[in-house]
Image (cartoon, rainbow, N blue to C red; front, side):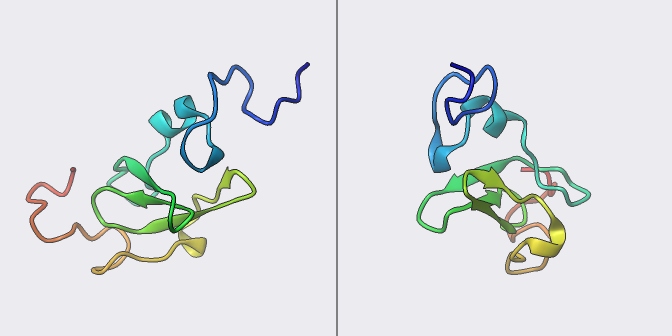
Length: 87
């Protein structure tokens, strides 16, 4: 059966219904390209550097800056205490 509800070659379902392998390669699309972390309460992926959040709709991460909720300093602006700005 090829239509199992996970990405092809998926090794199971991770946070937010996303394939763990996909979570490993996703990154914030701002210039810093930092890792993202799942926020299951918000139903979003959150940049680990600037805290910009990206919604996950029907199991699909929407990694578009136009659809994102900016972090406290704005999209791509590192949070205070992130000296290099690269997590």
